[in-house]
Length: 217
Image (cartoon, rainbow, N blue to C red; front, side):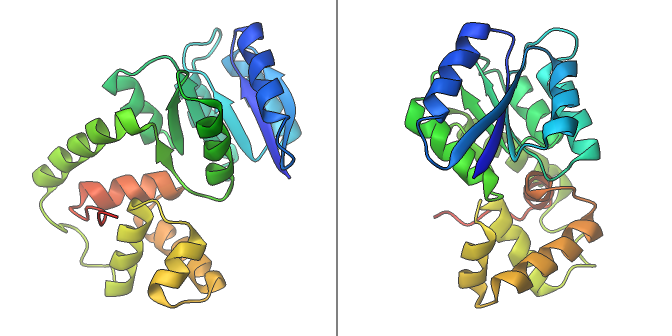
């Protein structure tokens, strides 16, 4: 069962989202928050697997709330669900560790799929945002230089980074590299510690900004 917390300052939107998610047998809405401080407190209390987070909320905005939540509970999967499509909001959300970014115009099946994907450790972006984000990180990669600063990583670790940046789950990476899934989990844990990444999104950003562009699939 995937436990989900909803964070949005519009009651009607939260109610609709709850009704949508509770139609799914594997998803349970464990709580609702109306502001950025409340969602931080509820995450500590309820320990949800996934938080659907609006950006523009009172007391503390969604980006700040995301940063604080992941500081103490980095395993929480946070999906930004917002009306804002501006690049700045997307980059801020990704930089603080959000694993997903969807527009509120997304259809119900996309939201449900996002919750399931993030609960499994994957990262995702609204298709409309992906091109902009990759363009920005490619620009950063060109400034850093191809694979600059990766001398301390093994060939296997570089492959792992590329696959993480491609959005593959641990199971998919295991199949790609002919490893046991538990081996992938252990190797990624050590790799994330080495590059000082707290989660898969930060690892993907590290990969792209160091010239390790994900394989096109």
